Picture 1 (cartoon, helix red, strand yellow):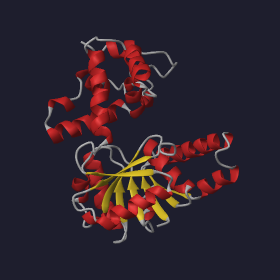
Picture 2 (cartoon, one colour; picture 1 turned 30 degrees about the vertical axis):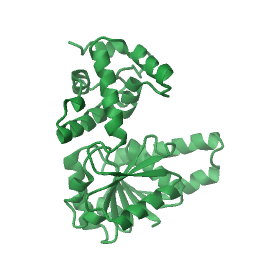
Picture 3 (cartoon, helix red, strand yellow; picture 1 turned 60 degrees about the vertical axis):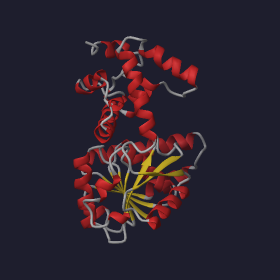
Picture 4 (spheres, helix red, strand yellow; picture 1 turned 180 degrees about the vertical axis):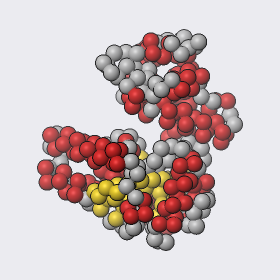
Length: 296
């Protein structure tokens, strides 16, 4: 399995493509948006330059990695020879179902179809294909080239052989795969998102400010990043989407998104990606005032 296609050239997609390519795989990076594809390749090149500067890889390894990546704007062409396809499109159920229907028709019968979803049911995604036993979750962590964990999520029909194959494949990438079952949020986000949501609730109810909440969690709980800063890093829209999946899946109030989070997403304050969230990334100033304007 040396030929891998990655769907989506955004933050997760280009990170996954980078990781496979640096490990010697031939990668077809696919995105229907030419500009997104161009930006994704540039991001990979920039990240490789940083690794060269830090002497983690050589200049030749950088060139080899980039040469292992071929861009495509057409899914059918891009997956033609792929033994594994990793979908890393936006966390949207309808979009993922549409992509997997297309992948099922375009890929060889032996190809394994994986999704990088952080919360959506693998079983539901697999259900739109004719090969549910060959559909699996590969939930990489951001930033992909650095973070070691990969959640390997079995759908209801995922075969033991496919699961074992993907577990071993993840190890060849230098990752630590952890097998989990298919329930909303899996393990990582089932635990993480309620904590982030509670942090936002703490701000919403005026218990403390952004800086204070993050400082308590960093210094008191030894977290490398405060929960509100982490939410900005993940993307507040992504956090909201995951919480909605869990709330709809479990019907439990503890997963209901905080009204502050909902209003910030509606206002386009999505975190780092939009330049504003709980912090102001346009000039590196703390932006507690940005959150306060949505409290009423």
